[in-house]
Length: 132
Image (cartoon, rainbow, N blue to C red):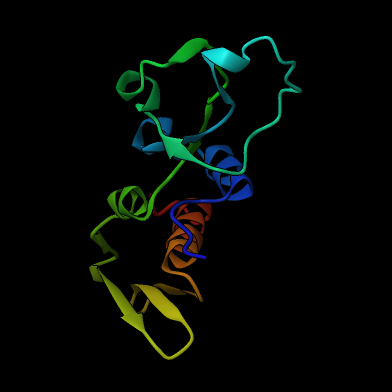
């Protein structure tokens, strides 16, 4: 399955590290159509993320039935968080048969099997090392 954005755990970590919530373009949460508004909900998050402007584009859903306050970052949003240059090194992306490599040569390179995860790891490293 293709991973389209950060996981719930990754999203929580990015918030903990201080990544600006306004840079997220998706949300995790609970949405119920009007037809199911009488059902009880336990307050957890759905495993399926959706665009943060979902309610604006889908008037058949009620804002009162929306719990989507956990942001998620798509690959595009993660790239927008990453600086283009760190310590005079330009951001690069490469791939090998099993891994994505993203980073800044002579600074740090994150590696993961999914590009979303490599970007996430790179942002975490940059935040922990006060580079962003």
